Length: 212
Ligand code: NYM
Ligand code: MG
Image (cartoon, rainbow, N blue to C red; front, side, top):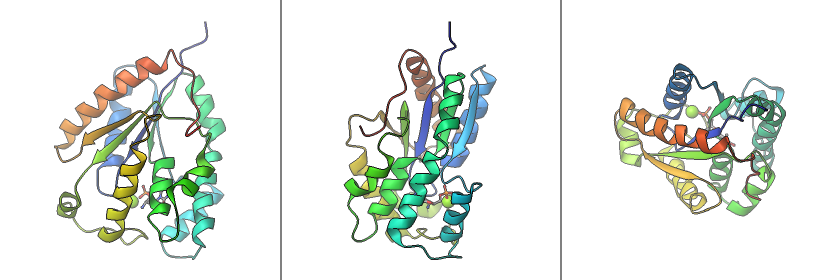
């Protein structure tokens, strides 16, 4: 019998919610209990497309807003063959941001609607679980200053939060809201519970297509 597929698990949230810390801890904990797992992140700045995105985020280059949106999406599509291969091999993928960040960040810009922003990512591998790390803007502010990259202002982050809230109304996606104001271990335990459930459920289901 073919081996059981891995789960596609995504962590989303505004900046400073603790996504990267939690992704790393989750991968470690899954591996320690004998479940093959790997971390990925978007944007993946290592590819040719990723380098264009990275220069834009670091304000070293200017890109037209639609153009950069499509590059973020292309950066996900270029990873799809390797993602599918790993999932089929039984590896669970823990992903730091995905199409939801893509749609939320661009649609927070003037002149963009959520619907248009979702289109290029329609048909991507559908996550078995998307955990939204929920942190109020005031709690995020207590975690220190934003960095120097594009989008890292509290005004823009508030707009992004609202777009995430719209995306979370979609019942075709398995959203779980995680209270990210607890301590690191508390958040981790919560995330681990949801992830083990998702891994068990995914074993008996085909990988879906996002927003289709
Ligand atoms: N971002 C991320 C987008 O605008 N669109 C996308 O599709 C993705 C995946 O890039 N502020 C934004 C959100 C972040 C920034 O992400 C870089 P990170 O996780 O800080 O490297
Ligand atoms: Mg960042």
